[in-house]
Length: 437
Image (cartoon, rainbow, N blue to C red; front, top):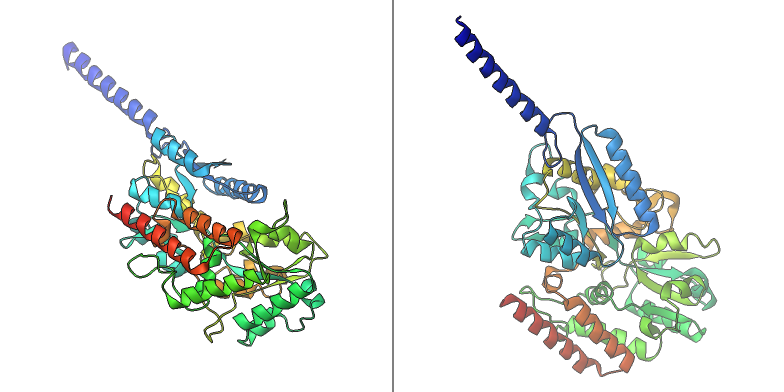
């Protein structure tokens, strides 16, 4: 080899070595799923009370300890959650994974901000599959046969009852016992709340929420929305009957609207001070109630007026979604899957938590400790219940507008029939206007 040829060969080798170094230095940088040995960093966010946030931090720490190649960071977002997430998405700073409620997930699907999860969940080797989750929970998270969010857990609506209040009112057969025999009906509920009122206590506190109103309607075999997504609560006979039942019992004070309770008092606090017989809620009351050692309580499914032992009731649900702009989707979906599968939900919900699994196979977390005595009814309600329909969740502000009109009905003692028609007209106008955009 001549001296000139040798110099040329050295130059080629130097260029090749430089190229290799550059490739190696960039392979594991943040924003890639490289294999350089550097950890891929992902972020996830949620709302939550102090107990929930602590459990989320524990889960994140556990995940990081078992994944040498991924480092997850949990970011709690207190207050104005939806607006903060939307602002972060616009600015390109949103986390890779985050919680989304009914209304938010609809916006995110429409503005194409979140990943279509169907291909990921159907892929060979995926840790989560659609069939793992209870069908009534998908609600607003699915559109046109595609899935954009997975229910993190759920909260089937049940009635909590105060045993001491019922006993002092002379009630000898408890609601859960009647439910077990298929005898837990509207008539029995009205009979009990009447006795409680006559003992100078509050029979049942009616909350101003979709899952409360919808549960009374469906416990009577009625519908709030038809198959075309139109509000029919004022014209469906079964629905009208349900609202008439509530209206009549509010007027005679067997039922008390929550907005009329003494200032500074809520149904939960008055329940714990033995002033209220029934309150409607999910499992979120359990951590609060079990702290009160002297409180005697249990749960029962919604009373029915159809002859059936149990009817569908509302289920409060939130979803986990994957940011479409995530630079580390493979690592993010790994965390996403382990958070939502049976192991992840068992880790989060064991120890008397405030929710019910959305995935099959871990029912023991609801039954542990036998708290409350008929905890199995949470699982029974999950089997047949439903998340908020996309017909309502998909229309921005509709749930709040409906609640405002119901509040006026109860507070101002307005006529029922005209109030329901006013709600129906308003709702369908908003629905039609939104669909025509």
